[in-house]
Length: 353
Image (cartoon, rainbow, N blue to C red; front, side, top):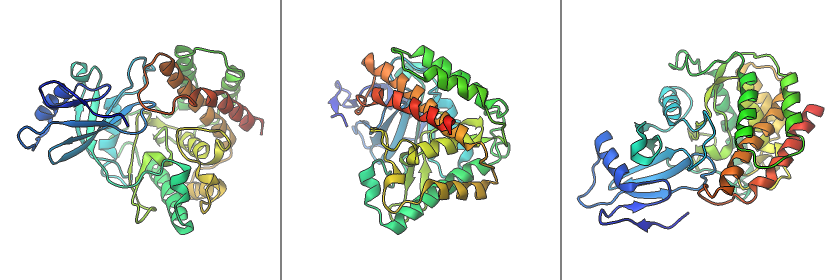
């Protein structure tokens, strides 16, 4: 976490990607700010930052979290703050726990990019294998069950009833995803990686039929969920909705597998691997629990287990591209480049099964 850097005579503090004085002025207009006279708005860059940037805002008694796009090169159609805020607002009355949105700013003149502010949700975010290893067996099982149940609850939400009927087009979702990630790879490619084109081609040749449309998160993993440390089976909030849309729910399940056990053996700075930690149930049990809760068939699951590493490989290649330009904020970028060819290999291996 970077140190605070004092600003000018305003008394506010600055961090990368933030003009604190302009942000304070916006918040004063957008929400009722109860701050003691002379209190500065304090901004802290939170851990992460390999994609959208996340900050903690404290101003007098207020404690908020702010999200904005990354600095510099931004992949087309990604990092839409308005969409993130919209899906959070729509899901607030459902069984899916999400933070409350406080304010949305579409005016680039404030910070150079759109952003939104939400309430802070207190709790524990399990980010690493070390975090996960501290859990007793019963707590680990409870956390896993609550996690997969939350994903199923999301996919059981009726988009029309939630006011999200126009949030995306489920039909043709997988085909559009393949085109989108191919385009984004082309826009951020700085090197050749064996197997990337083959993986994309084979995925396109075997695209499975859509069973039903649903709200998909797009990056559902444990470190995007705030849990109650006393009752880990009760998630308090699901975070990072930047890739949410209407689409094929099994794409989320494929990513769930990748983050749970599918990238085992690949050194990564992103998150832990619960499937390798003592006490956590095997992937097969969680997949069966999800299928029972949603009623979805898993006949073509290997395709989704190949698509997930392909998608993540494209995302990481874009992050590597920004890092080479000096446009990333935070730590852990050195290992990103080496993950990409390994993920491509995992995707091909899944299709070969």
